[in-house]
Image (cartoon, rainbow, N blue to C red; front, top):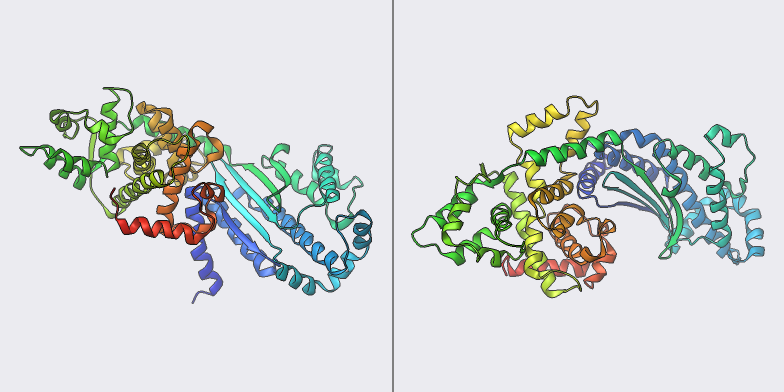
Length: 494
């Protein structure tokens, strides 16, 4: 029988896998950082790196995170210690007085001070997130750095530049007062071995928290291989994978003696591939229009019959399975949410609700392309990767859909869609990487995707971008779930 700990890790492993796939943060919070929590964090880190196929970073990061989180806990302990002794931590005289006895007093009575920390709500948070080909790590605690502490940390970061390695640092006399300082130098020197640059280690205060942020590059062989594979895979994709069930019904519409255009539009506008077929054909007729109804109305009945014919070279029909169907259902729901979000929460600079519906519908195209790979495509992938010693890692990341957004972006560019389409496909969940002109559209698609992923049980509310949610007047989970429930009550129509 599995222990409670093993069962917990099984559940969390699934959540970590989803977070990596969606490139959302994983956050672990502790108030006292007991030994069992440290063990749990090690397992979370190991699982996260395994999902990213970056296991080579584990030993380095395990040491560094242990050191940094212990430092954060000490900072919280220092606050309650000073408060209990009626000392002002920001006053230089009080600070020096308190530090004379801090270490001895807290070591001999640590349980007392840890309990005070918990009662005061002083926490330590670890954030892990895959962003593109980089890993973002943050250690946060809600004890704000004093000017003296910030100065000492900065001096240590500057001191790192003097040393080539850990051994050289050990041979020099360094300020080790308060038990910190030297640890920062060791951490930075260790992380430099796995690609950290001096600009990618930051310590700062943000929204009443002290934040240590580390940005590390992923293995360049793996992610360079993924980039190559994505481009070649899209280059090979010359047809659109239509579900057999959906395409057969579309053909019944267009081959009927008198085409019911309203019913036909209602049907194809809920299928991302059928809609994509129509949009692609529209690129040859006029400037791209993302309003599906307006595009539909530019085609005659005869032209629609040509688009939704087996003679159309863009069409490939695949068997409908429960697995493939769920990706189409996902895209339809995201489109519905995007439309209603844009209608009820209009953002300055955003496209029309009708156009955002289309972007929401098509946003899953990269994942659908991966999940409907033909035997020929699979063999092509294997042939491409024969000369890679990390071929299995590349394939694992590729087929699990971690790079689906990137593939969608490349595909949109190849097909000649406007930049807003490729931008949303590639960066809907990474607003830090997009230009301001497209920011409002990304926020709508992000919100719509998160509503659907939350409803599917794939994510938790804490993982969502709180700044984006504020744009839609959401500051608490109950507001988020209320919007989701109201939209579901109306049914997936508009």
